[in-house]
Image 1 (tube, rainbow, N blue to C red):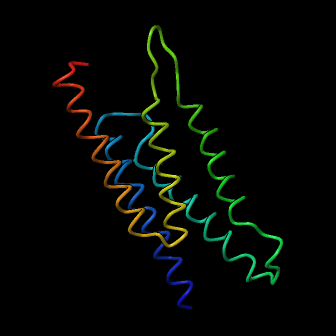
Image 2 (image 1 turned 90 degrees about the vertical axis):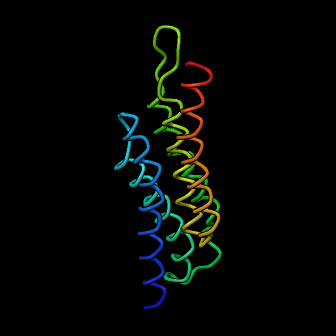
Length: 143
């Protein structure tokens, strides 16, 4: 029962941390935002939890490699991210959003691995980069 409560905490934390970054994307009026970031973070967290729990549930320790699951998450999110990037006229669009989704997936994996401080600091740093550097780009660099 305690393990289930921790897994529920992990999923909720992943939703919150993904939501923090997704909310910023909503504020700057991007197509991919709050819901997508939250779902990607929850999904990657759940896959990671399952990667570590399935061997104990089925009783076969040697046949499940959690690293392969984490690699699959990274590849799957890369596929999603590549669909977000568009080249229009002389510039790229969607690259920052795709990178954000990639970051959110890694945050979900970190939460799934019980690396809560690392996941939280990464979320806050990601938010700082998205907000502070957007202001710098607009005000200082005039982009």
